Length: 356
Image (cartoon, rainbow, N blue to C red; front, side, top):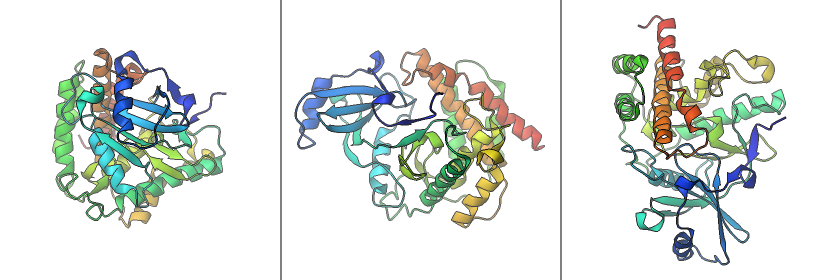
């Protein structure tokens, strides 16, 4: 039986894809001047994971790091923000939000062609399937609860104290986000999807009055965090490209989005026997988050619709990169083909709630 998790190491790596190769010799010369104690030959392989920013395992003898860089080619405005990834993780290293240690950021495109950063290599379990096969119901329950707990911890962070006071624009988060992803959709779209246009209009006219701001991850899901090798404990959250100052319920809704998608619809949970599996239902999961953050009960509909819409726009961007030969992952076309499904699910939820 195939395992649903992997250890962040050689089992996850492949030879560097042709489109993502860079001058390793030039990189090595540069990084030796920035990090002490590097000697011997350098070995570079690419991580299988990473739809957006190519990710590599860098090895000098017994020392290993992870490198993340922007992809080559023409990029959409504000996309692939490795500089923001580096900054937010560096700011969080001394908080109770688990992140990898940042080592160096290079914004000079003359070194390897795009900006990049180097970080500590973490070792543990990454669960790529939301149903988390191959563990007991008890551990599955603990894994989901640990994810819920670390999301609440993130949203309790004092971002001003962390030095992130200028990391985004507090206020009008969803208005700005609908505009941003609507623009990205129109720049990336490979075909006409009527639901996307209807969603942009609906979201614009249904933005909630609540305008709370916290530090948000932007892509908070099970596959973007690493668990301890033996315990159901989150040891690092990865992929902070979309992080900003924004509304915490955007993160929460994105995190519960799998409950509204079927397993064949890119890793959903809809229709599964959640109770016997040890996975909370969405209402219980949201209740736990509210208890941990002191939030009163609320209607999640707008936030889930927005998350599905945003995911549709992201998927179309992945499809566009695949069409241009710049995809960062081998299953980019499969992911990109989900655009219409996400949009249909979002509009279907609006209709089911009688909000058309």
